[in-house]
Amino acid sequence: MLESQIPYIVQAIRVLRDPEVLYMDVREGVLSAFGERLQRRLDPSGYRSSGYRCVKR
Image 1: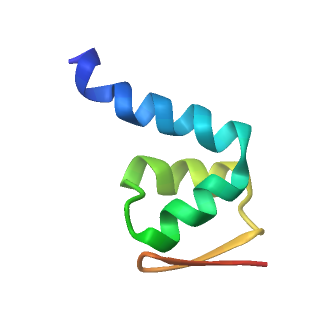
Image 2 (image 1 turned 60 degrees about the horizontal axis):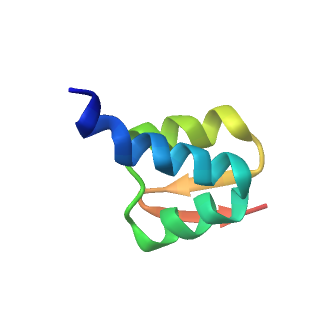
């Protein structure tokens, strides 16, 4: 169970260390639903999501 969560945990650490990584991952369309929730929690006003495209404010 935990093994399947490791990629998400690693991604969360990358995002917390560098918000630009989150922006790039969303643009590439590889951010998971978990990551999208994390995105809103990190900066609800700084990013606009439209499907998998993300525009930085």
